[in-house]
Image 1: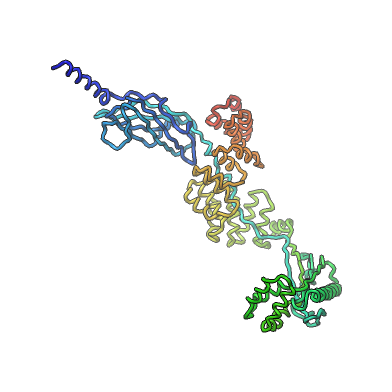
Image 2: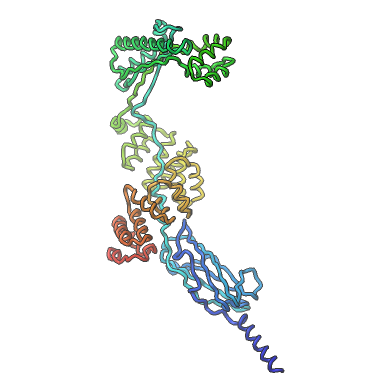
Length: 564
């Protein structure tokens, strides 16, 4: 055989061996990276994207490579979805990596979050199939640790919605009567004084004067003249009606020895065009729309009157049906009805709760800050008034605050069975289901609670649990809470987060821990350490958490170790 031909065949065989038959060499770990690094919890998931840069002449042509990301959590490996890539000579549908040029691989990863993942390490297994051979390349470490800040979101800290009572210690009542006058007259006729309406008015004044639970705060007299007759004349007439009515009322109060009637006020209106327009619009007068159009066209009272008088066929009907009703004085009494005092309600509850109305009992529960005492009052109320959904809702809210979630759920369901459309009840059921991890059921109920202020916290926390911190911040609005601050931290809006945390009236261990995270993220080590110390002082278990927390990887925690 020709030597040149032999050499050429040998060279081709060498290239064939190099591109297809040699085994893949280990890939350098620094050619792989993950975003984010370290991994971070969002909602109840840990997600990220691994990117690999495969060098030229590293991916053999007849190889299929399967890469599997896995988290090692306390010695247990938890795998994410595997992804396969192939060389140019492989028949398949996987992405191809060119032997001569190399290429990039992108591998999404997703894990369900579990407790104690803070120290989890991310690595890759690489499984190679080459013809009939199968072998593994060395595992590649990618990253160490998981940021679990999002898991601080706490449903149990969201205050459930209470439903307010309708109890009022002072109820304002008004009642009135009219004294009618004849056309162009201002004298009060006996028949008006003897009318049933006037008798009832006078009786209510006397009764209120003699009742210690009622207080007359004002009696007002408003006198009117009908629109016809000219403004100047009607002003004089209306004023006379007001003076005559005031004189009559003062004489009557004196005859009844009523002195505690508050303020006596009086005024007059020369031409009652407002009343005229109202009565015409309510009437059956055939051409009332024409009359109303005149009123809208002219503001001058004399022009109005003249234009209406020009409607001769209509004016006679107005004079008979409408105008007589506008010649009157209206007497209006304002009375404050004084209800039970706080002490009277508390004493009645202690001695005979059945003597109180449901609203008085609901109000009684608001007179204490002791959650257990509130629950006791609501339970007593439920035993008496078992058809009022507010009672069961508020009892469940107290149980929720006390972390008796099963009892709370049962009472929320009782409330819903009575009034399924109550927004407060729906919100509270949403909280319970969210707390139990049933987010589908939670949003079903929360969706029926929109419009009440208390729902802002619930919706915001729901979105945090679902991993949507942008929507969470929007839902929280101006709410002041640890959960609200957490949403701002996750959105990297550190200014808002700090302002929110600083505004919390009663900061707890979580408040200080979040402030410490803010310090770490903004390179303020003093802020981080001082707040960690305060958090641990309030909750000693946070010492171990802080030592594992990747948020503080650049903070010297040696002092915390000493305190531990």
